[in-house]
Length: 110
Image (cartoon, rainbow, N blue to C red; front, side, top):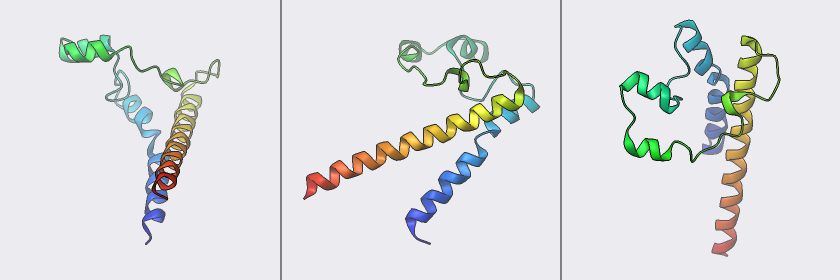
């Protein structure tokens, strides 16, 4: 199998599996998706916030906070759709960024 085909298969599998980040915590009555904790939630889990992490906490602003697209119905099914749609948009952005960077590198080598 060609490497490019493997890449597309891998991206497709990640896209299909992305809703598991919301489904699994819901099944186990977890507070939220694993590893996506705000500083307050991290304090609850660890008992403290690492100092450097606290400094970096406000730097990144998500495109779609809580994987939400505004005033879409807040039901569980619509939340899964929003989560998957966020994944699709993220994958498209990553592909575009990689494409642009690779084009710049190829043009600079000529």
